[in-house]
Length: 132
Image (tube, rainbow, N blue to C red; front, side, top):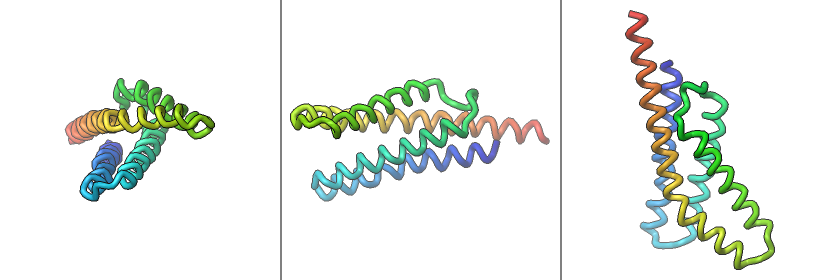
């Protein structure tokens, strides 16, 4: 269980580290680093979601993870659709909606990671107590 706890700690702190590009973008007051930061955080969360989806057992996953995975899949389909569409106005509105909602999705996933990290810590502490 200690390995799970360490993995969840790394996952949570990677989520926090993902906010660094946003802070840099706001400090530079330039929209292009901000767009890069959203892409960076999205990539970190997709990778984390796939790894946790495969590595965690069902009882180790937070209840909100399946809903989050559905929302993430919907976002991916919308982004792919916006790239494939030839209509620049519709693509603009889709990307605008994604940019506006992404901070909330980021915080939601960070909250899920935090809850799973606390649960993993409780499992690690319990296994230490039982082994004594």
